[in-house]
Length: 154
Image (cartoon, rainbow, N blue to C red; front, side, top):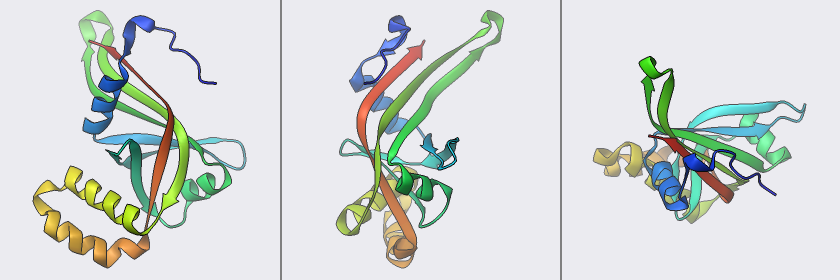
């Protein structure tokens, strides 16, 4: 169902891919518009309990696309370093394919708290209050990963 990586010499282990996914700051969520065009948008996210969670407004382009077609891809670039004298770049990257769906109640609250822990670890208590205040205006979606791969040039 999913293509094999062409550059096997650059393929990294699933554990390494998960570690990069855990550490990276943002990812690009790609969905398919109803008009047949792909739509890629950068999002903050957290990799938690084997799922990718991200928050969103309750309506908009990505939400409409996911409601129409839940199949998504998610890509991140961990570290990178341009090597100008060698005309190349050292990098590590991860691509995930899966199905996205909105989550609610307990799972939504847990995911929002994990996002706060990742991006605002010094402000957990304040973040909890933020969730209580604005959580009802926020959608949280998760990607159930069906295929994960990682690649690097180091």
